[in-house]
Image 1: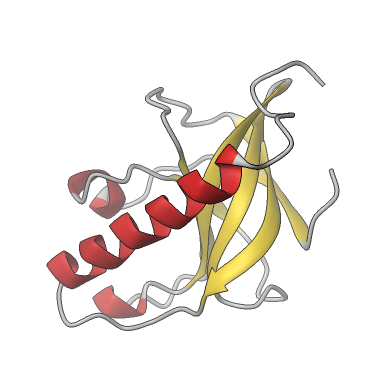
Image 2: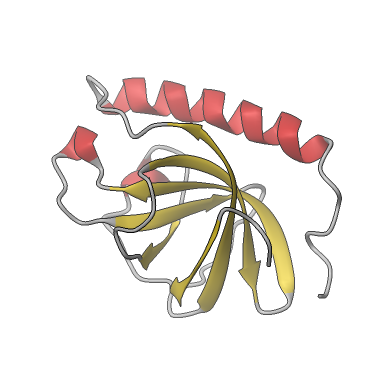
Length: 131
């Protein structure tokens, strides 16, 4: 898997904030060697790859100290807790920001999702097939 970084881990339960905002995420532990921010990414589960948006860092808006990766897989609605995944970070689209409210964060996440949809519409379609 080529890309800026590849993160491997087992999906663990978080605080379900992403789900409450309409952006359920697959959370995995990650070392602090990766620059914090939001990335266009591809999440690999078993032998399938899915277009994704991945946040890496501490959830500053919520005062979190835990450094982790949270991958929002586009058009995906499955329970994958306990599954092994690999997240390939392709391109950083913004820094880790502090938002004034959960609603302000959600608005930015909607913008990030639009960026991802546009990016992946022109991306070499290697995802969602066996590799």
